[in-house]
Length: 182
Image 1 (cartoon, rainbow, N blue to C red):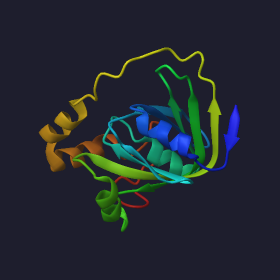
Image 2 (image 1 turned 120 degrees about the vertical axis):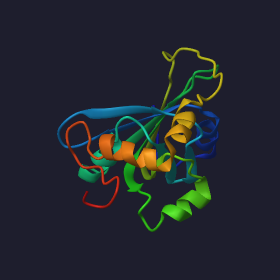
Image 3 (image 1 turned 90 degrees about the vertical axis):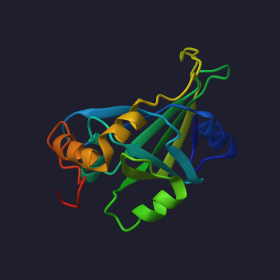
Image 4 (image 1 turned 120 degrees about the horizontal axis):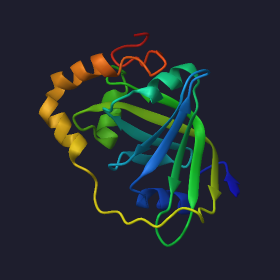
């Protein structure tokens, strides 16, 4: 295991090659959330920050957890010839569509239909480990299912879905999906 305080070029190159990453968050009490992410939705902002776009999903745990405890872990692992696990630890901030910074994030990173939040993670610790037990897998392609679902729902249908499914976490914590404090 090696520890770093900022991303090195080899880490950035590794991140840019990945098609899958995992996001972990937890509130003070309740369930720990671990979510797989993909679809070219994470970008290295600089050696101390990464940004990822959270698309509409069945839950909205990350946003609720960050309101309670501002911490996040993102993990990447290599499924190809060179084994490696890369973990990013830090303080994260949610940027919602009502946030004054939303348009700038959309301009810099893009925001397809169904974009729910950007999360800006300020890195405090980066750890690499061997990944020798991670199996080999081959990437075929990104699924189109979520984009197709969003297109079928449309903007109003997505907002209705957020209202019914994304206002609170599994443990009843508010996610601020529509406004701060809601």
